[in-house]
Image 1 (tube, rainbow, N blue to C red):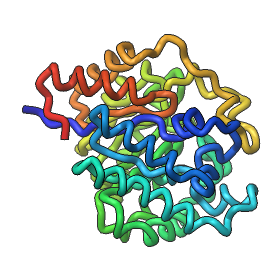
Image 2: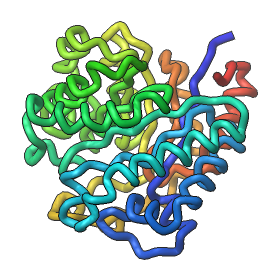
Image 3: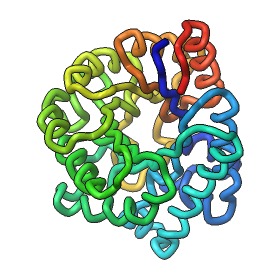
Image 4: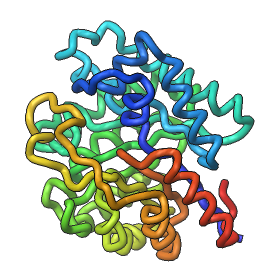
Length: 298
């Protein structure tokens, strides 16, 4: 029986929905200062519908992202609260893994403003060192260029835990990273820095199949978790955007999303889940489909 790791779905948007707060540039991060229990509720919801991984709410917990909001002093507090909520949910559920999310420095989808790898690795290494003893693996998310992926992987060099690399591809071309580089250009980096798995995330589900055809050749376990946006808008690529600048799709209900994800599994993916705007209902349907197809969710 083939084993499939079932990731959770969107963390940030679920937090916003449950908190009732207006989205801000750090919409999913600042809530941990006043309402950390909401983060735990989101993790609980995903475990309850079949997910086997809780992704920590640390995607945007970077000093360079907290500084403009004048909450850099809360850096370690935010890391600790995020990890604590994921660990508590996992322990309450009785099984599963905690994946520490390592999002892009500066901003998502903007490799042009990200520090070069040699500089970025230090920011990631600090975060890894602070939480490595309490998580099960590190999940580098939404890397948009080869150099961005390199910096994050270098920062994980002393993690002593599995490291998964997830990259994001162009809205209309799954063969290219959002930087414009060929996705196949990652092959050398994967060979050199040896992540334990390679995934495609925060991309339109329509382009993921062609991306998986490429990363399947890297010789690593692979998978995907797509977003539910119509596309990444120009407005979201400006300074300190909020999720309000992105439009949620109306045609990607749980059944439609599961159709895509089951196709990825048929391509050989062994890690699947959801990203932005893909919620517990989507993961529940995907879990149902996997079980019905006699895959073992691990």
